[in-house]
Image (cartoon, rainbow over all chains, first blue to last red; front, top):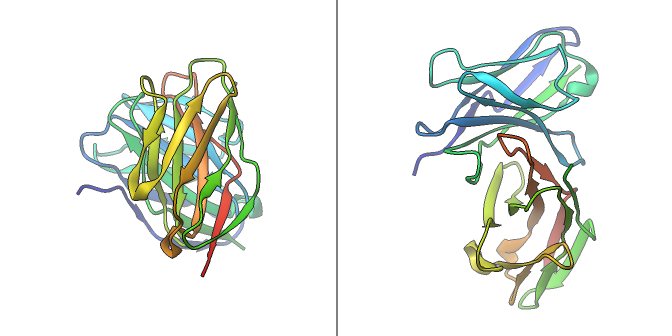
Length: 113
Length: 114
């Protein structure tokens, strides 16, 4: 059964450094999402991506964040200059259509020191 | 705007007992509703979903949920808890944006006692 994969599973970085989180969605999915979950808190929507552009983004998704689908298979989230408060679990998700269920990856735990 | 409230951040039941996890939502559009389960150090797995049609929805692992529009609720139930059901459960509602992003509740940690 196809699944969403994310790499790395755990990323440790210094404050101010750039990080790129990678996701490989299921091949026939057209909608892609990033969510994050700060330890002990709810899962929060960051951004959705469709047809090679951002379709929705939350207040959290400021200028420090960007997303890209560089080669038609990978879907990346870049944080330009990490802050301590960016420490969280980041989940990638995909769906074949906007009204379909979203399939989540296992997450990348980002720790900013 | 959409929002989800899950009553009870922690629920404990005995093995074999009824599981009831509560979820209330608000939505500016007809809602699509979901329950996801998260096992330790894993991602989110879909248990069940309601989009349209029958209001009683059956999911995996013996779980079911009933959409009650008048009560704006989508409570999750399972007749008989199993030790393997211990996990965190999230209720979610899809948004009104074009990509219908999910808004999650704060989660309910289910503990199953032997």
